[in-house]
Length: 223
Image: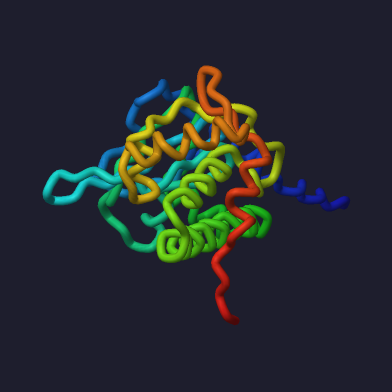
């Protein structure tokens, strides 16, 4: 009797379809995916759009800790025993997001090496990004931190083509993310525009020439 060959598993196809323990929802701009303090019982995957991750302190001060885009996961701390969300995630533009229940993602991680590879790559990329952010805060000027943030938001250095236009994002949000004031962000944004690094056209258009502002004077770390 012929033995049926198991079809190869494609993580992207898996994440594009509704199935056991996973659902797909569309979100409008500013809609909240989950709030700080909510039960942590699922991992999310962004098919399309961008989300903003914010944290509010006991004193009521809000900080933007990350902006994530297509092909990013979030909420994965539930897999490490987190029972309550430590941050709020809200969409910045119309988005399509996959919700994977905790049991469902644990199951597919265990049985599908291709998915495990994709998910581990995401975790490593996030770890590297956090370390880079820390180095950026410790060693770079606020001008270079802003330039780097704009390049990251436009997907420079990531797979795929850079985005020609960043979704509308306030200068207050940019200031929160790089640890400076809105007035300093406004000054640097005007400078970047005058130098031809960025343009305003219903959003922020970031040009590759902005890389010069980041690469010209990188902090030197001894190895």
